[in-house]
View 1 (cartoon, rainbow, N blue to C red):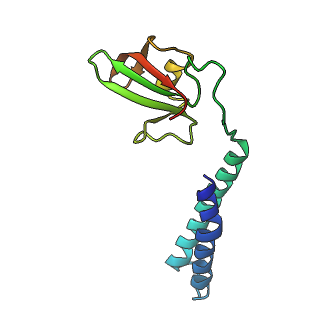
View 2: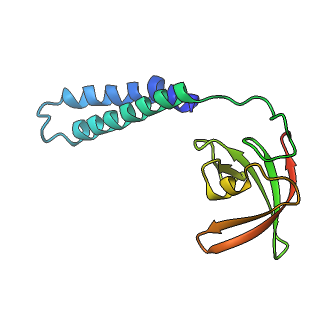
View 3: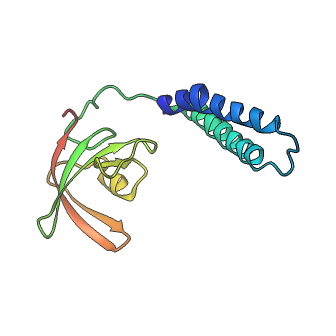
Length: 144
């Protein structure tokens, strides 16, 4: 998020501002598509910058493992198995960090909510879009 904020503020916004200034110099702004589009881009960039600044000021970096590593908490890598023997591996992360390609699931997701405070061997029932699924927790780790 910091990288995105830095890019938007230091690279993208100055580029768009320059393009808007050049478009404004062409004359009639009311029918100037480059000017209108550039102003719209600036509004979008400014809105995203405001969001990122606010969000970054509220974030808390969790840089330690919990006292009880036998239970699932924020930051845990969890391995599960469904009733058909399919294995899944997830890491519980913040809502801004989720990435299903990497197996990162948001702590706000139904799956993470069902897993929190569970231990190895526990069965977990998760409501999914295609129905409920039961999983068995096969592994909990905090460091990879």
